[in-house]
Image (spheres, rainbow, N blue to C red):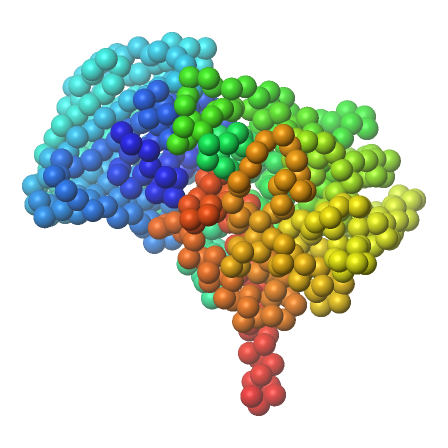
Length: 609
């Protein structure tokens, strides 16, 4: 096998986990049965030791295409050749609907008589554990890890299976309209059914398609770019845990931000920041149910925090905070970029901005969703009280730099948001307002203007005394700290364009100047920052420029409309994939730009233009 670039993948999922399916029909990444479980397929990180699950036709030459069935997360991979046409339908029945924890692949010949090969090569426990094979019948095989995880899988099919040194293979030929079905499922309970195997697959397929169509049909977005926005919403839903309500940042680990460097992190966890932004995007689209489940997850976290301890920046999907980082020495890494890390030591960091993102999402949920409870409010009071005593500390900031703390403007900005939204919630609900919150909010506001504004450069800088700007300050007008047309903001935006924007794409900072973390870096442009930039342009009235930048950015999506975290020099995708940050940024930018364009059109119509 050869490495496929990450932009050559689609994703499927069941609200427990996600699998990456390549254009060549190979599933090269899946942690199972949960997002943060050990991987069983990870050829994306090591094509020899990682494991994979491929089905492909035996053609001398072929082209491949991938698409989603409309408005669903059911993926179709098509193989086209003068010898015939075949296709694979990949999906995972969702936990909410059919109890989840199984991956279904249906192979169909469209034209010609096509021979196929199937190779299921699991590598349990991040490729660290051997496994035993139990042949139940010609069409059913059990695979069980010998490691501590004890993960057990059952592979069933409608064609004969063979075992070969721990790998499962099959060779079969299908005429036009004939199908072969495969189910790989987690053996944690008995799956019994009186239906025929093929009928089970057919019924599951129709139920899954209908589930996704029904879900996306509840979106309230009716503007331009509907298909693009819907795809991003479907991605965000796939990153949501049905069981817990938590939302992960991305389903992969250690996909590098810079090839041949060391910036490789595990994103299979719930960052308070990322999840809060995701909630904001979903709430805009009308998905209050998902928002409510995440708020309930946060409520439990706050309830479990003892005394005046601060909120952690990230947690596992079930709310555990200990995410000890280790290195998988035996994996060579994506495109041989090591180290391959699991866990994330950033959980120890102090990032004060998380309070602002969280309080903003709670404020919006309380306003547009359900009213929060009194008990939850009292728990939030404790967190805001802690922030009142600690907001002026230096921290690692939104970009999680590992080279020393600073008084980052972004962290101060979001501390201001935390107090501002807490005050707004208290006023809206007539909760008793803690003395000092309003004063603290105003102190932060004045400090940002007095300490972070550089009169010579006419811009808000990354931190007091810094010589450069930071793309995170693009949030200043978006969180309503400053008017998007304020002269100070417009001059800051101009400075960002001069220092960080490259043909509409935005770097988050100048790494060597702004955030030395001991790691050399040639990282790409940060896709979420590009969407923030679009939204700032549209809010400032620069609609033609905003639309051009937005359309350019849409052109960098992969063939299915998916984005990683960053874009490299040649437009290649970098960082973990797909990235919630990028897709929620797209939704927010599309929502606002569409509104501004409509308002401008209506204004022109009313003025007789």
